[in-house]
Image (cartoon, rainbow over all chains, first blue to last red; front, top):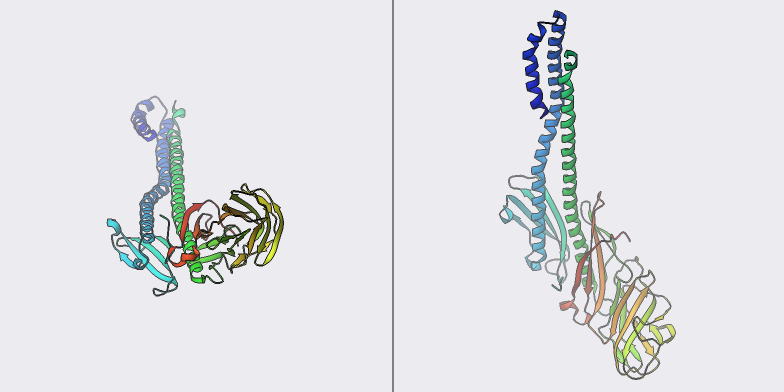
Length: 156
Length: 272
């Protein structure tokens, strides 16, 4: 807003200056003209110095907004898968790589490993690790880990 | 007039820079806070599943150490690592870790027999010590007084508790320290035959101040204990704690034992 007012004002000053200067001394005219030019250059330099880091910062902010959307989405997809595993028959909890998980552009890798017992023992526990990446990227955006034991029964 | 105009553009530029800087600072602050919140949400989700890991592992340990002849099984308390920088810690009060088996209790004239007691953890801490018991009962016919309590063959209390209304009179017993092998409450004895009794409830008052109330008669296929587990990620103060009320159901252990209730609590397990 200030810039919008400032620019026409400066232009008007530049255009009016010769008319006013007819009644002034040459010294005063030179002084006014020189000062305005220096002033403008100084302004451009100062604004430029400040604007560069600000624009870089804002650019990073815009990037970070997209990254945060990815992280949020990835975390929620990992949660969804672990909840699904909590409600899956124990024998069916297995490792898997699921590309475009649930129709989203994210890949989910589920790793299942026994931490207690084996598939053949009466009691056992598996460690379930869910890692989510954006499709086409190797960067892990979210990782959730839990244990699920055999013969856990809930009242619901 | 000319002097007044001097420096106008510079002052305006400085003002502009100040305003823009303030705006950028505000946006930066907002975005930093937003990211902190996002990070908190992600760590919080991790902690919840770590707490679940602690519960599931505890139930595995109990079930895999159960033999029914000397122990109902037990789990370890304390800190365990699930993944790099990701841990859970299990613990609870003495009352949480007190198992009271009421699957084989019976009334024999003036005595209640067949209650069994055990500590649900094989770890030394927390200690599970019964300091006193409140006994109440519902009975028709002649009024009776509770006169003695014998645990594991040792008389831990004698006296007179006349009040049958819950929570019942307090019997300040000799402290009983429990281990991960069960022991019998040899008998609760009254002043005379307890025919007509429909209900006996015992409130166990533990040395750490926690209490647990259990209906010991009539017999029911129950042996309840509570597992509490806090999930944490190293370097963060965020935690999530889950508690599971597990019923061992001794007479049908293998097929019916289950979590009776499962919820989140706002208490961090910090010891042992």
